[in-house]
Each structure stands twice: as C-alpha cells, then as structure tokens.
Image (tube, rainbow over all chains, first blue to last red; front, top):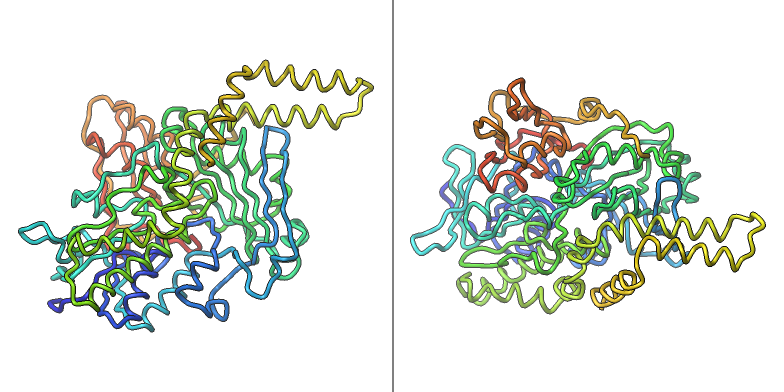
Length: 434
Length: 98
C-alpha cells in the first residue's frame, strides 16, 4: 500500500469512529484500522450510551441505531452481605421524544457506527493489527506499520484511538503504560431472559430501561463497583475493582462476580437466565491526573487510550465520542488552513478539550480517585455496613424505645470509625467533590 | 457471602467466541526460577485464568481463553515478567456482544 492518507485512525471503538467520521465528512482521505474481525469485536462496555455525544456526530441516530432501552430509572445501591440501601430515581420525564441515555450492546452499535463512517468515505480495514508507529528522523509520526504484507501505511497524522490498553503509544514512548492504581478490571456477563420477564422484574414497560450501580461489601473493601443494566432481552451484569487492590488482596474477579450474582438483592433479577458471554476489560479510573500527553508531532490520542473517563459519573463512552470528534475537527481544521500537523499546531485539540465538559468535568473530580482509593476500606466496606445497621435499627420494631435505638446506631458508628475519621472523610469528600 | 463459590472459569469462557492463533501466543512469560509477586498474583487475577503454576512452582500462560483485557500487561510487563502484544489481525477473542 503506497498511497498516502490525510489521516490514519487506529481503532474502531467510540473514539476512533467519531474521529474517522468527523474527518471523512470534512472530505479528508481517511484510513481506519481495526484489529478485530469487525468493528466492536474487541470492544467491551456496560454499556450506556449518552445521546448528547452521539447527536453531535449523527443527529438522526435514533432512526436506525441498534439501541436497547432508554433509561427511565437509576438505582444506586449501598450493599452489605444481606442488604442493600437504595436511592432510586425514576421520572416520566425520561420518556421523552429524544431520550437522554440508552443501553446498548457494543458489538452491534459499533458495527452500525462503522457503516456511517464508511458511508462518509473513510476506508475501514478490519483484521489489521497495527504493530508500531512509523517516525521520520526528527521523531515526527508519519504512518503505521501493520501486520499485513507490505504493511507500512503513511499519513499526515495518526489518531490513536486504541483503547485503554493501547500498546502503540507506550511502544513509541508517547505515554506510560497505565499504572495499576489507575485502572479497574471489570468482568461482565450477558444474561438473556424474555423481554416480558425483564420488564416485570424491573418494573418497566415497552422500551423503558433501568440501571443499578452498586457499591459496598461486594468489592470486599477494594475500590470497586457492581452494575446491572437492562437491555431489551438481556441483562448486563458485572463488577469492577482497581487492579492494584485486586493484586494486593488476591480476590479473583470471577469469584467477586459470582458472589454479586448470588447476593439476595441480585439473584432474583437474573434467575433462570441464559448466559451467552463472559467478558473482561480494563476501565481508566485515574481521572484528570492520569491523563497523558494528548498530542505531538503527527499524532493525537483520544478516548480510553487517553484515559478519559469520569469514574464518578460513570461516563466514558461520551468522553470517547467527544474527544474523537474534537481530534477529527482539529485535524480537519489544520488541513483546511493548510497547516502542518505539528505538535504546536495540534495543540488546538487540547484547547478544544479544555474548553469543553470533557476536561472540565475530569478536573472537577481530580482528587476523587485517590480519595476513594486511599480510603476504600471506609467507603466500600465500613460505611455500607454502618448504613445497613442504621436502616435495620430504624425499621425493626422490637419494643426498644426510639431514643435507645438512636443511641445504638450512633454507638455502632463511632465504634467503627472515630469522630475525627468521620469528619475527615466528610471534609475530604466535600473538597474532592467541589 | 463469606465463602467464595467454586467458579468454573472454563464454563464461562465456553460461551465466548475465539479465533485462536494456535502455536502463536501473544503473551509470553519470561523464563524464571521463582515467580515474582506479580506473576503469582496473575494466577488469581487473570479473569480468564490463563496463568497457572506448573509442577516446579513456575508460572505458565495459556493464551487460548484470553479476553485481551491487559490486566497482566499493566501488572507484570513493566518489570519484564511477561511480554504482551496484540494477537494478529482477526485472531483472539471476538466478542459477540461486548
């Protein structure tokens, strides 16, 4: 392959597809490389899609995108071994004409997305692994080496959308391998059930969907979360914990998943289901402070490869879409102005990110990952147990005077955590949230 | 929930779709006498249980069930305990749902 492209996009996930589509629509000559058999075959997500980020790329996506359910209800669960204390939010407002959040199945969604990329004029090559970046003598990225025969391809700029485990950037010395404290390992299963069963169990009608995000003793004191998402005819259920915590404690991820599935609050929701897939994936959890260099001479990085994930709001796919789009816009803008994609000129990509919610949100929570991680025993074990105890004490009617009950609750709180510890956590949490 | 259930990971992986690149493992464990703490951790941590201890107490990898999550890379590549590359184009795990 001797022809030269305006841009090569590595990866056909959310960020890569957004970048390739944006550039192809602007008339750039785009080559997109994907190592899987089809776009999506290597991609794993919960998965929730945020309409806002997709609309900016494909305004009419609701007409033919493979969407599962639009979300009308969100449940947050704080769990101990026998209970969960929940916060539910459900609103008829979410049954709007243009719903805000949907569940999706990535392999289906990504294939649909890729069709739009191809229709816009990009050349998409699957089953092609990129082995390394090609640089000129001055260190500027000028193309990629693939595992195809005569596999060197050249372009003015390479957009790295290679995912959380991106090897290329590390190999080329553009960024470090993610630190074990900054990634979570999530395992997930797809549980199939008749749609009526799902709707009855989750109190849904039609294409309404519900989401459960759960934290507590299910992560055994590690920083971690469980999740249950309703699809049309399946339930995605999974759990993720920070890799350094898993390495330290020696918990096997599939054992955590099995225990989560057997929890009395969870088991009835998936009872009788047929499991059709078991998947594992890393999630960037380091937040703002873990974001690597985002651009350089002849290259940009977007999405999970740039560690763009908002762990607090569980937003990742939208940040991937937005960053991919901004990367594409930056490249197209330079091309339009006849400017070289040097590091200096490509800084407009970062400026766009900084001016948007992508960086602003991540910056807002810059201290949160470290706080939750450092105090994971308190936030994921002690406090959930205390809340459960307090709720049970409040609800169980056994002839004890209420004043005595309240005293008992307070005593159990202070026995588990000193007042300075409690206040300290509250202050640190408030600061990190600011 | 204090007793961990006995989980058969092989049964879970059986549901998945793979195109295995036989004889070409994309992960290699560096030959060693005694495994590092990181290698030992992988025996428990790898979600596909690709890592096992052999009779001599050394850690071995079998890549067939690998879901390419990269956890072992994050943990053990830095100090040279393993080398990790992507499988050849089209090979490896092929998620039906993802």
